[in-house]
Image 1 (cartoon, rainbow, N blue to C red):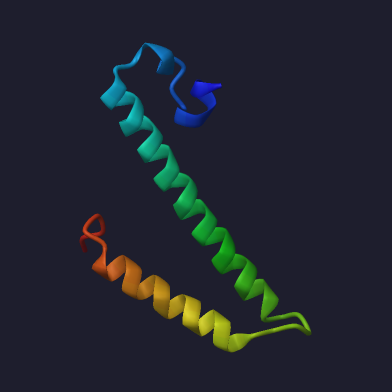
Image 2: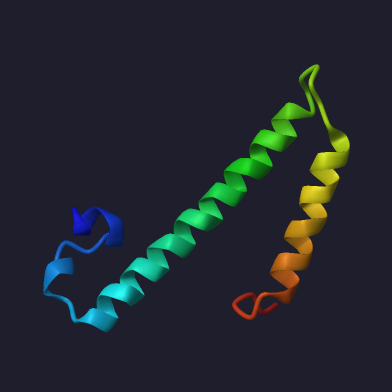
Length: 75
């Protein structure tokens, strides 16, 4: 069970801090993947009758601000 969350088959043998580091890394990866999927679904929604172009632009602006202010993203 722990190996599936952390992606490490030796998860049970890791120290407490290493376990939290592995889980934190995996959670950030899943969060980034969910943001990409949400963005793609909003773009696809633009081509349907229930489109909301304003929501797509608002999401785009939020993503720009979030990644420009993130200490992990340096250009």
